[in-house]
Image (cartoon, rainbow, N blue to C red; front, side):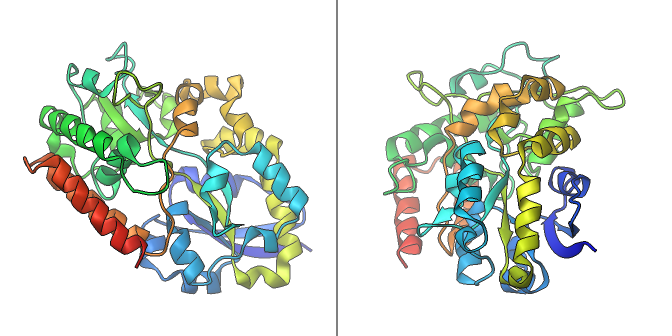
Length: 363
């Protein structure tokens, strides 16, 4: 008889199809779905009491740890399993789930902000943000947290000491303001999925920085396919443009202690390279396994999404993960959205953002 587990994932085909398409001979997981926003609005302690497995995102780790909702992966899986999974993960996904010296989830889905566009209407995607000003049909993704995440992709501090690199942030705000004036502002309420749908519908040609969905690389029932390119560079001397890391990880709750052997079996099979290549990627999943991103066959199936965006993924900015970050992230995005439409001094605005971040981060 199969051991039954209960899991919760996000309510999008990329989030549930891979999990519902994978089966294990000894373990069955009943997967429920909820919007990603639900993980923030529903107390994590409540979810942990009802589910053995939770699909979460790394910026919410601080709240999950504080609530006691997730277990350190070292308490659940063997050191050998963890070493194998880490060696197979496309970076920086693995490190994004490490906090306070422990891992709190295993990477499941990998995503970052990249340039999305209509290849039938735009022959050459913008290599730099200054190039975006020469395009027509531009739309920015600024809904929800995305205005703030866009600024972090362009100017997040990589030293770990600050939130923003001040000079880059000031430059980025100047360019983003110019692009905003040049863009289709009536679509400001669209999230990344909405932006992809907008491009498919032909109401825009290019979004220079948006979380990518490889599934839009396949033409469906006469709908045109989309294409992606590396994130545009902020400065001419930048080797690469950058985005802010997204994606999801699979966390284990304390409720699962009585079934930990079944959890281990299930996750070991799910993260197997063949499962990721032959099941997850075939149904539109965006695997965090490097072999998928490096597969020429998978890349062809999804119109070059993986090869076009792999280096942007590898260089992505990883957000802070302390308890309280999600609330600050929302405030950051609201501020950036306001800055796009006003002429407030950018340097002073960046200083205020940094001061408030310091207060939240250090209590």
